[in-house]
Image: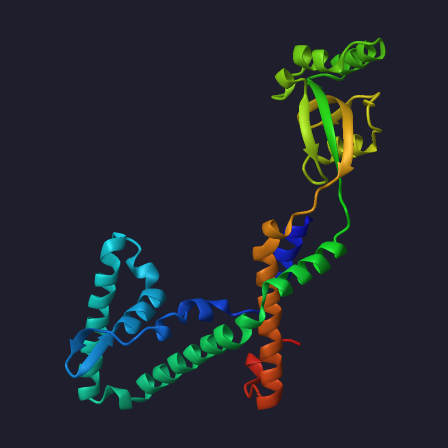
Length: 282
């Protein structure tokens, strides 16, 4: 498993209900604007800040419209929302139990998202990410790669005959061009550099056992036929740079910070699941 795959796996194993965060994303820029009234619905007003918030929350809804039209569509939707909200209030729907539960859930989700974006995210600085990248990178054991060529033929007899030619001084690249049935044949059998897990097991085992500049003295059988393999070079697999793995590092650090905030909050506030059938295994 390489460095980035390892990070992604770590993030995936951590409980992190980002669906809630993404579902009602808070727009920090919206609250910084001067209140500019864009529309009126009865005695209510819809401001530019309200529209910016709606554009963030309902972005997917308006993706199919031309960009120049999206704000107008979002404003029209806000007007519709407020029209029905006013009608609902006039009929007292806000006092009905199921509606009250829904309002409270939306309020809790919004505050949850606000806490995440205003208290947890700002603590994740570029220096924090770089430091964590260095820590994670240091944990990853250097993986070896080999640069190899091969000649692929259908029968063991053909492969043994080619090995005899190589032992007699024939050029590997020219023999690959002439006799290999694999797609790399025209390129002299060149497979470039590859690490563990990239080739079928029989091929990989033989390739990694070879010294630089040597070739297999016995044909290597795989599902594709019989191979003669030559290793041209060996090196340590280059580790990803900070820029390449920054997204995974950020997600990992955010996941951990979220988890710590939840753990601390649960401890301070106190939580208890009363229905035994709904308790998660420890």
